[in-house]
Length: 406
Picture (cartoon, rainbow, N blue to C red):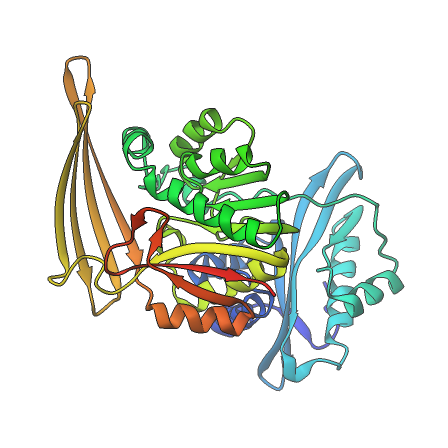
């Protein structure tokens, strides 16, 4: 295919430059960015063009823009369809027609490959882009695009399940039955904050909702709750415990936030590392920004984070609990150099007169409370630190925040 100047197909030499543009694009839109996954996909599209491709605008040896087009199949459109998956022009090169040229490239590619329909998405605030696309003949079909994002740790690559090591069946059950006091206290604090603002109904999104303990209290108080948690075992319990709430299995970083009166992330949720995400201050600030945008004026965000000192003065904690013939042993170590905490949790649950042993290793990023406050202020929240959730006093190194969108 002859590419509209100055676009050309990506090469291996463009790899890092494209990743830099992607990183800038995702930061601009507030999306979490996984460089390793993006790198893999760039290689796949370069080596197997039947799935589409990536083209770059090469201006005197500088990669100024890129466009990614992916291929699919559609019964509705009678064959192949394509999607302008990503299009980004570096700020310094905007206004030079690179966006229009990229769309022309995508259309030429589609026609040459027998594509019946070319799709694209426009963020609601991108009014200028929407006008450009309408001018080129793109029309809204009156439908709402709905997307369910699967956490990468849950997707099989055909060779390994790559299971995420967070709250399997036994630990989820023990957590629900014996450690629900944190969520109950948090729900009490949130309801009080909402009532102080005269908010008696509306949507509440619970990120890392756990087993539905706080969701039950919120629905009983008249609120509509959507909970998301990465643990299927947690979601299974939550669905039964709080039947009036809605629950989905997924990542708290990808869950959409829109038209809510409150958002929660209880239990050090923002710090948990997964197979695809290692949280840091920049990622947290971007997520806080999307939450701020999705909250109604006067809306409340309630969350807590683990920080330095969470594992005590020595940087190590060892604890054991015995609950109804189930035993839980915790060994926790804090690494000040990497600002991370590692919890090794051994669960012994009764099974047929014996005990089944399960081990989980949880890794958390630690956040300085002052840095969290800085991020909240930068986004536009008015925030206050909490040292307790109702009657539950948070130990050293564990800080809660209640933040409002004024």
